[in-house]
Image (cartoon, helix red, strand yellow):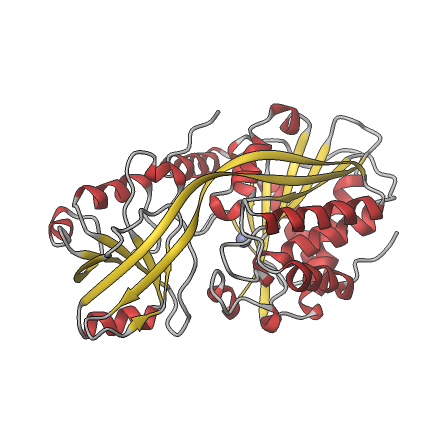
Length: 418
Ligand SMILES: [Zn+2]
């Protein structure tokens, strides 16, 4: 069979970043990227190539401005799904909020609250809103990184929203050490938009056992989204290219997910459809790849046997791989699949540059062809074994503790099983 070619994968990534660029969820540029991926799938000779369309609740930022009492401007990004300020803006004292304890919350009434927690679940977000702050400031998590582009989950703000801006970590520090006052002016338009997953298949002889390989191709607003996640999409594309004409027992389904950045919307839409999951035995998700100074890790939301298989394959190939069952703080498209009972694995390439994702720095400078070598070698071998095996060595079952953790994660985000 063909061999995974790291340069070819890099080329797909480069093409998504240079020819399309930003691919914000639910925009024309996301659609352009989808069309490009669809054409590649067709070129490779995948079968049943199609788009799976769905709607997303999102917003367009029409104006964003932050300034200090001396009139100097502060680089900021209005947060998606936040509320517009009055045209003249909101001005107030800035207070850091470290927890949602009643005492901490009492201090933010009529103030601009800086959220120092990495992410808030829906309950805590609503607690913050009921404390009646004027507005929210989200600092970038990493020192020296510029402002990040982010959105509040649509579920959180169904009834009520609030003005919010994201500001660079260091600027927030200076604000807290210095003037402690900020003025913000934003205009945010909430909209419903279309997004899509692009799907292609290599049919297997069994007919009722499928394996999904996927990654999201969308980005947050403004950024190039090189390692997050043109790179993961590139791995999916290169795997599609090398497996396209293989004779196999199981069907390989390749999916480029849309609107991951708005809260795993594409994968959730795909996973909630029982037609998609009834024959599905495994989901392999690629999110954050291509980082040169990095290393490979895997999150397994599935049975121990699956974890062992992955671990043995990596060992036999001499590929260092960190494997865990912990989801970590972020989320990705493997989670909705696991939520709906499909054993799922996320393969990521962590490293310093992973932390500047969702900022203006997230371009090709951190990436290179060599970064695709290990993930390619491992994925080709692992998939070949699974797709050609007489029988899968693991059951379609999520261990209870993992299933509970996944359910809690969705419950905390205000998401129910449909
Ligand atoms: Zn991502």
